[in-house]
Image (cartoon, rainbow, N blue to C red; front, side):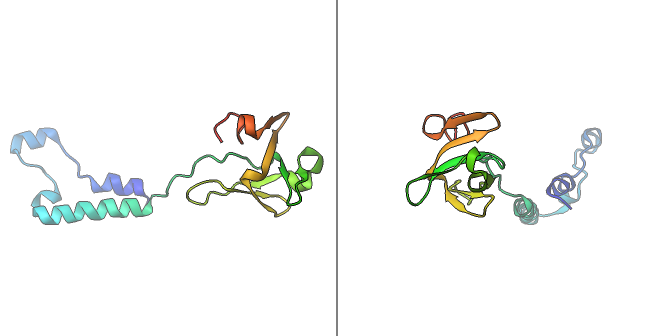
Length: 137
């Protein structure tokens, strides 16, 4: 059962016409004491929150993009001319920020080492345009 099913099933069906006639709510929860009803509501919310996944923001670099970066010796590496060492495989989310880039050769690269990015026929400088090319990343 998914979280949406829990939300739908946790809310009793209310029939306004019946409620006006009898002036009562025709639900199983109406027979519970206030403390029991509060405990039931808390369990539903906790259960829904337990099954919900936190949202992950859109990564600044996408798989297949080429990156140019400074290696440990200060030389430029990667890019379209060195696809083996410059193709993005993943940009993992660590729960707080995107700090590393996994390249297709298995090398884990700090995001701050990247100087240029190429996606398709478009290339940009990270300092001027951000990692995503639009100044947001």
